[in-house]
Every structure is written in structure tokens, then in C-alpha cells.
Length: 175
Image (cartoon, rainbow, N blue to C red; front, side, top):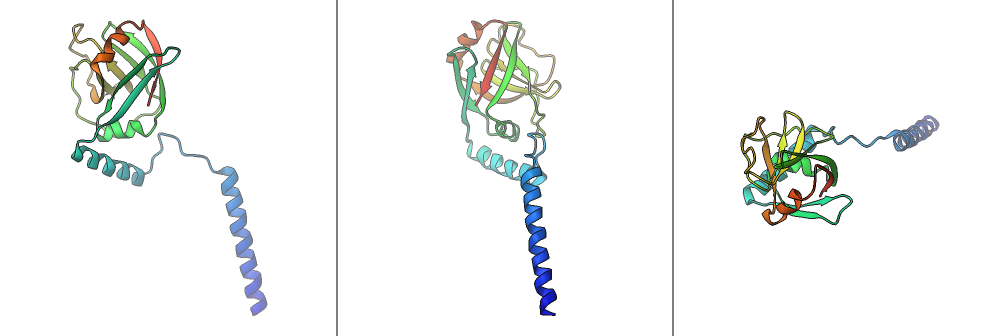
């Protein structure tokens, strides 16, 4: 009987090793869009604690191909925190009517916030309707929006003239 116990233990060890090797070779990192419910709950808990403490974190936006850097803060909301998980994030942005730069995100966040159809200069927003991020820099032109946006952060207003001089499009790295 002792002989069978040793054989059984050897087989279990071998199968465990094979399983480990297969895991090492075939494991694929989950996509940015595939967070488990537990991860979302943990992220929401951290975000709720930050929101309760009024904690905002540093936002840096670098315009690729230039030495231009914008400074600001991310809001302490579940939506902003979920987007921050994917940083650094490179987004191709297009200028719109001399008031904003916007571009589509690659992943779609699950968290939501209260949408609005107005903005303040310097607002960084997420638009659920077209899954885009935007930086608003001039409220004097068309201050009313046609789609709801959710504010997720802010760029320092001292940096906004840099955007006015940028042109029609740019690739920006959000960090």
C-alpha cells in the first residue's frame, strides 16, 4: 500500500509541474477591458476613500513630438480612477471648433458619473456616448455641448494658451 501512495504522490507532483509549465506558457495578461468584479470593487473602495478625503492626484499630459507639457489633477471619482488604471495612455486628439481637443479611448470604462452639457476651461472630460476623452480650453466658443460629458480632471488654466497654439490635432500622452 505504501508503494501505491508513493506512486500517487509522484503523479500528483508531476501533474502539478505540468500545470505550472502550461500556465507559464499559455497565460495571457488580461486586457485592460477585462477587470474582475473583485478588482472593480477594490478600485471603487480606494476611489471612495480618496473622494471622501478629497484627494486628487497629479495629471500630466505630454504632447508627443513637442516639449509641451500640461499639468493638472485627476478627480477622485470612480470613473477617473478607472481610467487612471490604464496610464500611461497615448491618445490621438483632434481639435474641435477652437475650444477642445478630443480623442477616442481604446478601452471602455465601466464606471459612470453624472453627465453635463457644459464645461469649464481646463476641464478634462469623458464622453460615454462616443467613448472619448477631451480637454476643454476655450469656453467662449460654443459653450453648450450636444452630448453629455463627465468631468474626470482639470488642466491648469495657465497651460491652456499652449493648446490654442497647437493646431488641429496632436497625439498626447496622459500620465
